[in-house]
Image (tube, rainbow, N blue to C red; front, side):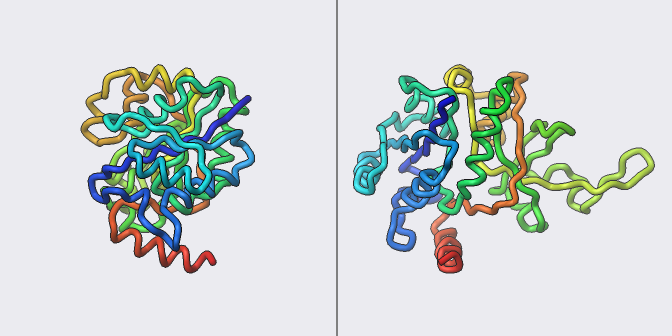
Length: 251
């Protein structure tokens, strides 16, 4: 079963234009992501799907495979679908182009999830939230799951509400309630990816600005796996300062 990792790279980021080319420790941000993905043992190939000649040139410069895609896509999944439509592969892993510290073991675990369960159409990654600041931050996407680990909902709001206190009362007992954040990493069956990206954007997707809600609104399930490995998404120029500190600690 063939798995391909694809890194969507959009130039015109709203809060940080050109961020995938921003310098981080002497390398463009996108190169850090690509180098992490190249370490994965579950991926047969890694591809950058970009929308700007500057990204294409940079990717070619450090030896990455890259393809140009339309600048009009609303989501990374839409961009990836264009990039892989003619590729021969079974599983497509969406690796966010703004997470330079993504752990290869997390990517591998997600790819293996679909390889080991032929019934799954899409999987993603969540991590337990420890602090209230992260839980309340709108840029951190929260996820609630059922007993089997399937996603019930994703939101930028603090969900579930009772988790703000760390516990929830069920019947007459108090049980711990874990809080999870969503890491923007997905694995899809290629056929499902091509089908799902043809659907119109859904009301909840537009409301939350979260593409995965399009899948849930159609009645499909998204399987989650919990990772212990932390990552850092670069959303603003200020986040680059955090990334530089992270890079120094890791060397």
